[in-house]
Length: 431
Image (cartoon, rainbow, N blue to C red; front, side, top):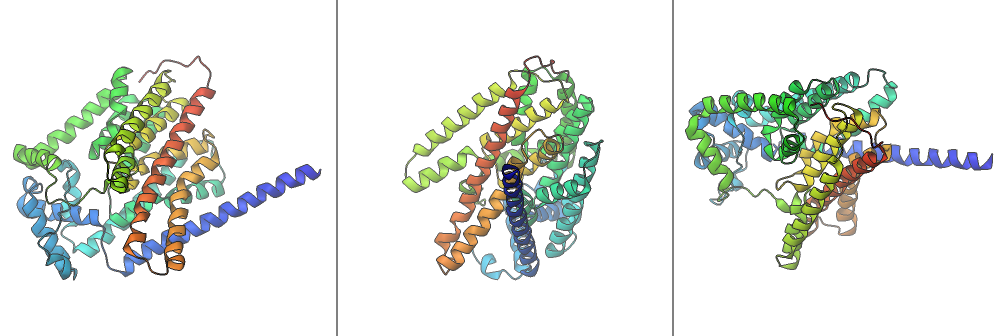
């Protein structure tokens, strides 16, 4: 009896601290949103989206990839917001948007609204779509149903995660990618590989996310999935060319290859192996970091090979877990991987949670670790160092980026463990 009481007491203690951490993270999340609202700032990424929308509306989509057009439009917008100290600098770094024209269409119309109001229109729209879609996805992938308290807690946990916060503050477009990932899962579970592949095509918005999954589908001969992907890709590419012409398409290619005068992609704040190498090189004034980066990437790819050696039945829980492993590994390997991109894992994590495929503590840690660390670093800066000096605050994005890599790799390792726990006799994928 005593042992049982101790066990219950321990469980209650863990739940108490988890709820306390969750409350602190919610408060931090809301404080960041309110600060952004009160300071009348706009997300740096959204500034880029709004400016290409303005250029597309006034000059056509083919002009959205011209650096001088971007520079003029962004400087004028910043000046109207009162940032004259920025616009006076001739060394202003341009915020580019190297996306296919298909994905720029919404911003053509959003640019007709003044920048600050357009940003908050976009933010509120993203929040509404995100919350609505997570509720929709949870209900559709969990027909047996779970308690309303469990559903609410799970959705809140995903909403207050660091990737979602950064997506909102920066005005990013990752909610669209999350929806694509969720529908990819839904149609896969429903055994409709063609439709699943069509939704996968939406990830051409950030094609680096397809770095592993498309070659794997080719190796595994998932022809229906690839057929759907090709249909979507063809439509996106044809629409983009019709909007911007071949001149605009060449401009996009030039933008991908030209970094002169463009704002830094902040590789030292990413959540991939590149971030590790970049920080080692900067700290030690050496090129040794790229060796660590290369080694980490090779080991991750080898681990992916282990993950995909057996083919679970298409659309089965084991198959969804394999996809979760592939995408979490992609975030670690791909050369451009910022925190907000981890939002594509959220539908996979919700599916894994409601079907008990991952330990609850793993999902909880993924959602809260970066936020809790951020709170801790802010407190240290405020009360230990007294002043938030540049030297102190500059370390925060690097620490958060490192934690993003670690938590995504923990998810990846968890999928490997899940795979090893499954029986050897798995059915060949029919996708």
